[in-house]
Length: 71
Image (cartoon, rainbow, N blue to C red):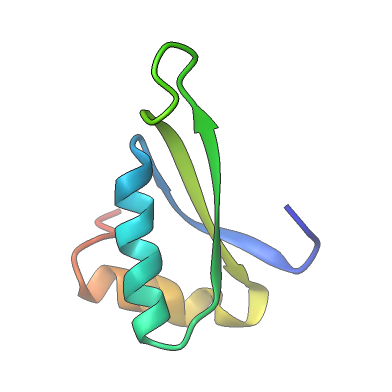
């Protein structure tokens, strides 16, 4: 990932990361998903959601409020 971006969410399925990305987008936070496709079924694979460093704290707060981030 580019410098200045930080991981705020990881999911075992890409669609979960896309849902988190949509929630952040609704709150005017730019994010980016990096995927690691499954070798057998590319649409099933892990995904990591990144935001800019300055948005990380707010992004985590929002994801927790929406019960997306539970840790």
